[in-house]
Image (cartoon, rainbow, N blue to C red):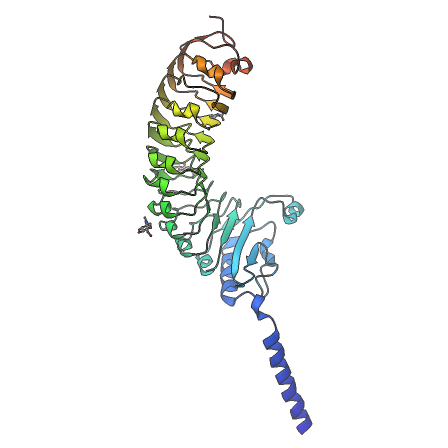
Length: 370
Ligand SMILES: *[C@@H]1O[C@H](CO)[C@@H](O)[C@H](O)[C@H]1NC(C)=O
Ligand SMILES: *[C@@H]1O[C@H](CO)[C@@H](O)[C@H](O)[C@H]1NC(C)=O
Ligand SMILES: *[C@@H]1O[C@H](CO)[C@@H](O)[C@H](O)[C@H]1NC(C)=O
């Protein structure tokens, strides 16, 4: 009897000892697990079964697309891409498709650093506004869904955010004023939504920004001069919006700006000569209301893989200095009001007539003789 009692006590002690030694540390905290299960419940992924792996107690191990911080053992990354090279896609012979919405439960993942739910095509509903309260968020990538509503008004609270990509959704509203407070932001992509209003006047506060891709929205008003203070900006795409007013000459003074797409807007006034002598190599100003002459400012610093000036109201001659450009790959000055002889030599010897058609009175190769 006493032996049995002793045996049980010993077993109990051993068990307790064992439990206390078990590394509970690398298990997923129940609150994070519960949040993930709420996220799963709000989404429907019919073809690949990625959420079949979201089961069992430890969300830090082999839950598809979930990873935890090795120190805190809190959920740090959610990475769900509908187009990826993961074998799961190959096996299913298709890209991802998902419907449902992004549950606000996501905001309970207090340590979330990276949230990617991208290219699932069918996820609708809004971006949970509470997302702006996730202090550790660095990457927010929701490209290629059907999200509607607005970019959360207080997105600017995400002081660590480096990537904000909500392109190719159905977002409306304006660019939140607080966005210019994102002092770590390097990559902003809101292309292909229905976002309206103007670019905040103090956009230039985004000093870390290297890519600002805003095309295919309903943005209007002027391009703020302050953009040219963003000295790391290499890629500025404002195309296919409703911007108006002049092109700020200061854009041509930016040290690393390489791509400037302003095509498909209502920009007016002349082409600033600074753009011709800048480091810009892809320049698309097509389909605006630009007028005046093509600046006679080309020189050895002019290196353009693309220079599309078509569909404007440019007049006068094609400047002679253009032959002194180091390189011009694709040049298009068609559909303007230009006149006079097309200069001979590079870059004109490899261009086709379509680059020059529909002007007032251009002549010479590759058009008809003068
Ligand atoms: C933008 O809104 C218009 C109607 O205002 C709608 O027809 C169009 O599909 C919307 N575009 C996107 C990308 O959501
Ligand atoms: C931007 O941040 C500053 C300083 O934290 C704050 O005072 C201001 O209200 C913020 N602006 C917006 C529009 O949120
Ligand atoms: C420039 O923009 C126009 C209008 O958006 C577009 O049709 C054209 O293809 C672009 N040019 C180049 C060379 O990409």
